[in-house]
Structure formats: structure tokens, C-alpha cells
Length: 638
Image (tube, rainbow, N blue to C red):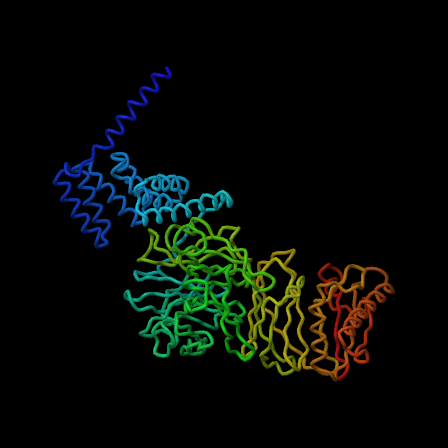
């Protein structure tokens, strides 16, 4: 039986080899050739559907027309109809393995386009096994082999059984027959700004506003930004008040493409201003992105001194409002290739960008990086298939919820070329979900708005994560990434600072916050609760998490050398009254002792414990008791 099976196998193999070498282009039906040539003409003009009709008629006249099958595969590949492309290639291979052996590389590329990376790797290995390949073909095959090996390993390292990549077209209110791309959203996900290529050549900015779940009909952005020149690659600040963008070949430009700035006014967006030589150069600058606190500007440039063609840089805003000299983000981000399209999420800790120099699927891939405690970027990670493909990927932005992404694509349901789409991010590549607090800072006496500094501090590390300046009316917006406990401080010279607290390490609130803050002028009897002074239960030793707040008090006293203060301690009504008074007194003393170690004269400091005798809320709930356990600062004299 074994010998019979072996003999049958050999006969079949010999027959298949003989059959596979029967194709002779000279023997093809002339009618089929005529239809085929008509199809080629249509394909060369980009009329793929019409081309396929002629190719199918050619195959109808002669099904053995291998060149027609190969061309049909190529057309489907251009249309990104990968499954149809693969089927056409396999039909051609079945007919003649030798005649078609050079097509194993495009076949492998289309297998990868369909996400079938292991078969793609096998196919490219077959292609590279040909000893007669010329050097360019071998290099192209080896490049693809590295990409497919990466893809196979990535799938093993990132199992995604429950993840479904299902991009949704943003709809007719946003997309049109023109090209739409480079989306940008505000932190509340209610304003979407994007670039539209009007009439196929002029890039302008369009805006759509969300009402509940519906987007309004997009219109050209108000104000003085759109012009006869090309404006593109824009980024709207998280608070919706600033817009930075790329302007190419502007009269006031310093190079081929420069970065420009506009601010929102009552009349719309202001006339754009070139960001000047501190940011721009005689070379190419593009794809800007503001950090959520508007203190840092990220962008891509091909200026000399980088690691490759285009690198990502950051410019930091100085106290005088000007932008500092750009700093290269370094070799962990930038490579010998091109890096571009940086997007800083609202958490201010996660950056997405494109690179063709880092290992990926081929062409420009999307990557993420996480900000480290020293401010550098590390933990670089490819976003993986199917977000990344064998094609070039463009810009990506992620909403404050950490899971809703916006990008441009030309999928099968496009309204015309590139459209704006949304999809849900895979969990392991999401940024931190980010809430926000907004409101107005004002003088508690006059009720007038106060321009002030607003800071968000990581209590555990003492690191200032976000620092923003209110506008002239005192309005502010500051982001609140989940997963940490934050101190929230508002400062203005001549006023007592405001101290708030957002304990997000143990809970995940869904609501955003509106907090209007009345700052008290520094005068006798003005007081503030120090919400970020911490002690263990029934203990009076200061916890490390209190240091940032204590140093704020030190700063206040140094800035106002004439004032004297009282630090008062308070408890809830749990336990014996005498014990509570003693505990609160020791806690207040601990604060004063720390201030003295920082050089504050003891004669300026008093302390007193009041136990539970001065509650500010009821003691019937845990929340109420927590509010009564507090440390206060009161101005005794100026």
C-alpha cells in the first residue's frame, strides 16, 4: 500500500509539473489578447473597475491566460482587495509555477495586506530562494522578510482575541467627495478640526461641532486662517483656544514649510503669526502638536543635526511667552529614517507618532511612547496590525476617554479618497483616560477674574505634571489623567494659594469638574485649607505625599516675608475629645517644625490643635468626617 501511494504521488507530481509548464503566451486566443490590452489601458489610467471588466472578458475568452490572471491580481492589489488579489495570484501559480515565480513577492505583500503574515513569510522565503534574483529584487525581498518576521512575532507577543478593529466613517457631515485628513479634537470631544483639500489642490481647515452624538455640517473655520495658500497639518489645543498649523510657501515663511499660530477671538480665529526663528528654520517644519498644558510644542523637521531625514523636536514655552530653542527628542524616538505626526494625548504622558525607521510592517507605521519621570520618552511600541498595515499610515489622535481614535483612511465606504474615521483603540496601547477640571479664578472680594497659574502635581512623586496659565478673564482648563492622586494648586502673587485634591488612584470617576476659585488677598484673617497635608490614622508624622504642599507654604512665606501665620489642626468627632485635641495639636506642630527646617523663622509661626470643635461639615458620613480632618493656614498679620 505504501509503495502504491508513493507511486501515485510521484505520478501526480510529474503531471502537475508538466501541466504547470504548459503556458505559452504565443498560444493565447487573439480575442482574449485584445480584451486584455483594453484592460491594461484602463488600468494605467486608474480606471480599475473598467479594467477588471475587460480582464474578465479576456479570461472568458481564454481561461488559461496567465498574464491576465497576474494583471487581475495586480489591479486588485491596487484596490486593496487583498483576498481577490491573492486568489488571482494563486490561480496563476497553479497554471505555471516557473513563469510566475517572480510574482511571489507581490503575492507575499498582499498576503500581509490581508493580515496573513505567516503565509506571507513563507511566500517571501520562496521568492528569496531563487538564486537568479538581481540585487534590487533581493533587497526588496529581504526588507519584506524582516517586516513579516516582525509581524509574526508581534502577533505572538500581543494576543488580541477579544479586540475587533472596526473603523467607522465619520459621516456626511464631515466627509465629502474631497480629501479629508489630519483630524484634531478638543478635550471635550465636541470640536473636530481637520484639513480638506478643496477642489483637489487647496488645503483649508474645516470645523464640525458635536451635539450629543451628532456632528454638525462641517464648514470652513471662522476668522483669518484659510487663504489661497496651503494650510495643513493643524492641531487645536485641548481647551480649543489655540491653533498651530503648517503653512507652506507663505510670503512670510522662513523655509519651504513653517509653523504658524492663531488664537480664538470673539471674531473668530486671529490672523496667523509665523512662530519665528526660535522654532522655524530655512528647512522643513510640519505636523505640530501642543501639549495639553500648552507649555510644549512638538513638531517634525528635516533641519541639519538630527538622526535621519525628519526628526521630532520639542520647543518649550518660556515665562515671557516665547518659544525656546527646539530640542531633538533623541535616538529612542528618532532614527535614520523619518519620524513625523507627533500627537500628545490629554494625559500628557503618551505620544503617538509615525516612523519608517523603527521596525514595523513596511512604510510609515504608527508608534506610541510613554513619558518617563525625567521628562524623556521611552517604552516605544508599534501599534500593531490592523492599525498598522503594509501601507503608509498617517496621523492619529486619541480622545480624552483613552479609547476613541480618529484617523484618515480610504476604506471601501469612503465618500471620496481619504475620509475621517473613528475606531476603538486596543486596551494595551491606550493612553490614560483623562478627565478635566475647568472654571474661573477670581478675587474673592471684588469677584473680578484673575490671571493665575494653575498646577497639577503627582502627590506620590511631587512632580508637576501640568501647569497652565488662565486667560485674562481667569478661565482655565486642566487635564486630570486617571490612576494617580493629584494636588491641585492655583497661585497668584498677593493672594493665598488654593489647594485642591483629586484622589484618582483608587477610584475612576466619570464626571468632569467645574470649580470656580475665589482667591483671598493676603490680609489678616484670610485662611485656606491645606488639602494635601497627609497623616496616617491617629499619627502625627507627616507623610511624604505632603511635601509638595508644604513647599508651597514655604514659597508663600518667602514671597511675603512680613506675614505671620497660624497652622491649625482639626479632627472628626471619632474617639475621645481630649485625644483629638492632642492629636490635632501635634499635627499642626509637625507642619510648623517642617517650615522651620526650611528656613522660616519660628517667630512668624504659631500652631494650635482644635480637635473636633470646629467642624466644617457633618460627622455622620465618612465623606463628612474626612472633610473635618484637615489642616488650615490663617494669616495673623502682614
